[in-house]
Image 1 (tube, one colour):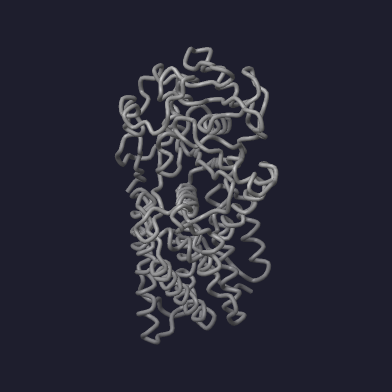
Image 2: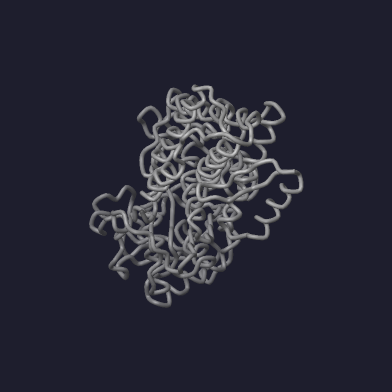
Length: 483
């Protein structure tokens, strides 16, 4: 089965075909860094982390770009909303950029703890003001934007396809207007590309229209096109950003370049808490640091992956504890497996697990729009078979058990980012070595997916020098002790 992804732009699953064979350009909207990360961030960035991992496992060279929004912007679709970054900086009585730096570090700490791979390029909005101004100038030059009193707005009337991502029409926007009309605009649906900085606004930059700051939407157009080109493969983000943010990105990007902006739009769904939308105002807001303190970052990751990225993730204590029990069940199976490996003889029979079949099932799930719940079910299927085999108290060959260990390192560790390798911590030296080798195998699998062959060989040769031999098979990489 070839990879199928759900493209929000066309509202259907489609065969994934990147515009350049063997290469995928992918951009995901990063966080606005004015507070600690929460479960909604875990849902989004763990989901896209798995998408990147799986694409690389298929042999694609992926250039992954994820921005940091460190410039305060107005949050309302009519550009009259609150600048949350500036507001929080005022509460904490620090410079907005100091606030942004503090919470950017906090964000990366949380993502690292959940084994979320860092994006290849992490541009900051504040470092790309020149590129944003250039797009605004291009749109003005084409008659698609206009200046009013130091602010610049995109004229939605000049882009007939406005609404193609969200399915909304300009008439719908008028009927659903939530704020007073901004008299600077030609049309209520027009959106800000550049805003005049009023007195007291700290983060401001010079522009052809006076001192100001960029609108929310223009930053992602500027940063994605700078690093991925005027048209690229995947744009990801939360479903809540489909409108207005991503809709406006399409309008201003395609308006400026005259070219299609993105081939596949992927959106993850939101997090609810006991069936209600999560939010600070509702008192049900859960930071990742609090969740980690209670359950641990790997359990949080496992919890996220037990829901499809396009499905709502409903948080409750019972749901996370259930995920934790499932994670521990898999971890216990890996502990038992590694104990058996340490004691196994070189010869003998295997436990009779069809890894080729299970690999096909796992990849079939992931090829179906990255269906991680079904992929995790395959991990449990292999664990169930393995536990049944161990219950027979037969002695299985070391190589057959190492093949299963390598299968988990590849499918759970490398593709899903679930670090079951940690299951071996604190055990006997033999099992601990097995855990370390499994971790190196998972890292090497990531390296090989990126075609970094020299580094892959360095890991293999380094292990060989300390008596660990690797063997790459169709079902994964196995290892054994060598003289």
